[in-house]
Structure formats: structure tokens, C-alpha cells
Length: 256
Image 1 (cartoon, one colour):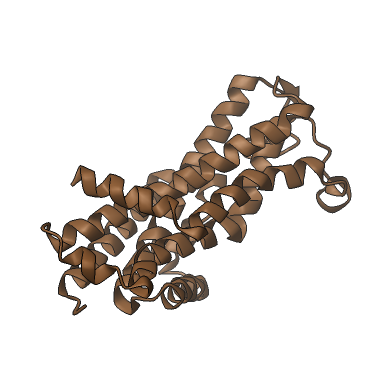
Image 2 (cartoon, one colour):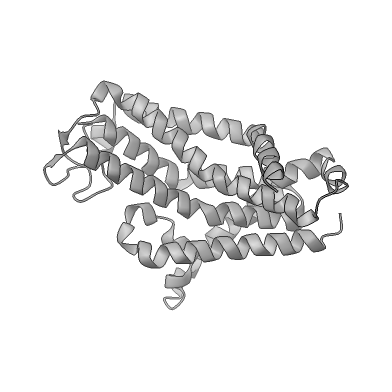
């Protein structure tokens, strides 16, 4: 199983959507580090390189990172169907479910790799602004970017690592959902569109207050609300396991 996982992870890195996603995630922080209109648009004057890392996360989690994760998870299976290699893989002497389980584990790792690329890019882009202590905030802790006083490098790093970890957990069910749709439609485009449509539909369900605490979309900003982690994290993991389990069951019974 471990051999199959590393094989699938290697194939994941060869996907065009994954390589583009990692490059974009790394370069995104440079946009904020060099943007001349931060003060006019956001009322922010960069006081530290740590804020560059945070800006990249905040901007990416609005749409870009979820979209990149959905596309990669959809292409992980849909690409093999389009190339006609999936049937050949299924002729190999290992259980069918192990192939999809390896793909699932690989696509669940991808959000953290994507966020790591963004974090590393943010550190590099933020170097000219310094990575020492400063008066202000990272934008992810008390007081937002204004902060509540002096913030040490260790405290800033801690806030950013915690936010990136929570963001990665937020992206896990999106990857599992996209892979589930890929097993249903066997198409990259169709599965990506279905995953995005499902998220949009969930957003509309906020009109039903009784459902709101149980909706996946309620916790898509968990990196900004760590106080909700006690409820949000178990629910996100439950969604991930549920979507992943349904994907395995569908793939096992799929006539390919």
C-alpha cells in the first residue's frame, strides 16, 4: 500500500494543475509585498514580513486555494480516465480500492503542500520588510493587522503556523469531495464543476439557521476563527471521511 501511495504521490506532482498551483501559491505573496495600493485599498502599511505571509493566506483562501485543491483532486482520477490509463492500472495485481485510497491520501496531502509553498513564498517575499518583532499584528490574531502591541517573532510564527494548519484542515473535505465526484463522473471538468456547485449550494443553505452549524461552508474561514475549532475540526474530519468513504465505495462498484 505504501508503495502505491508514493507512486500516486509522484503522479500527482506530474499533474499540470498541481505544478501550476504550487508555483502560483509560492508567487502570490510577492504580489502583496510589492503592491503599491495596500494603504488605499486595505488601509494597511506593511510593518513586517510576517504580514505578507498572512495576506497571502487570507487572499488565497478566499477562492484560489480551494479552487486549486478541487482541480488537482479532480484531475488525479479524471486525467487517468482521459488518457486511457486507468483500465490498465486496474489490471495490476492489487485491490481496486487500494488504488483510489492511495489517490485519496495523495490529494489530502496536497492542501498542506500548497499552503507550505505559500508560506515559504511569503517568508521570502517578506524578507525586505523584516521578520523580527514589530508593533502590530499578523492579521490572524487579536487586533487584526493593528495588533495589541508588540508582537515577537515567535508569537507571529505561532499565529501563522496555526492559521495555515487550520486552513489545511478546511481544504481536506474539498479534496475528498472533488475526488468523490471524479469517481462518479470520471471527468476532471465535470467533477470540479460539481464540487464548486455543491459548495455554492451549501452557502445558500444558510437561509436555514438550523442547518448552519452542520454545513461544511460554515467553517471555510476556520483559520480566522480558531475559537470554533472545537466544533469545526471534528465536523471537517467527518465530512472528509464521509466523502472519502463514498468515493471508495463508488469506485469499487464502478463499471470501468
